[in-house]
Structure formats: C-alpha cells, structure tokens
Image 1 (cartoon, rainbow, N blue to C red):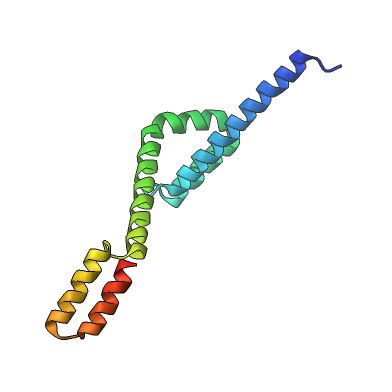
Image 2: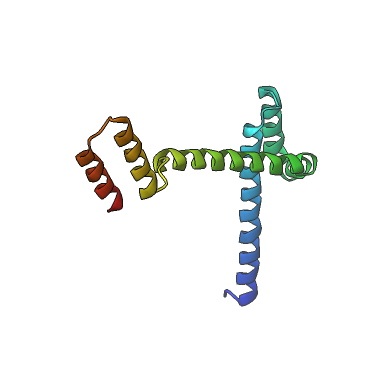
Length: 127
C-alpha cells in the first residue's frame, strides 16, 4: 500500500530531480552563451556534464558562479534598453496637444499653412 511516508519520499525525490534538471539546463545555456570560451572548451564542459554531472555542476557553479550573474545582468540590461528604444520609437516624440499646437503655430508664422489649416490642426490636437 502507498503510505504517506512513501508519497513524501516520492515528492522529495521529484523535487530534487526537478532542481537537478533546472541546474543542468541553466549551466548548459550559460556555457553556450559565453564568449570567452572556445568551441572546444564548450564541448569539454558538455562532455564533463554528461559523464560526471553532479561534480561538473558543482565545479562550474563554484568556478563561474559570479560570471553567470554578470552575464544575466548584462542580458537583462540589453533587453531593457532594446525595449525602451522600441517604446520610444513607437510612442513618437509628441508630448501632447500643446506641442502639436506650437508646431502648427510655427508653420502658420512661417507661411507654410493658412489660418484655416491652423484652426483645423488646433481642433484635431485638442480632441
């Protein structure tokens, strides 16, 4: 019969297996993301992870733990900068109705538009 103790042991084992795979895939992603290691170095780390996984994971985390965090922070900053640039490009440079009316007034003063066109632009900006 399945007892509560059996279920708890299964749950604990499942938890550690999930942690193991999360760490393994996280390290593999970091190995491929690194620019300071050659292809042979990456292959060596992967072979090390395949044949001696627990030891390889501990060695990698101990020797490159701080670098993982730095690469993560740099990647997040690049993504944030790209997102901010995209938002700025989509949002445009207009800061509201006052700016549009001021631009229309400049066009009116320079003679590029008529008074009627200025009033039309002003009305559309105020909507």
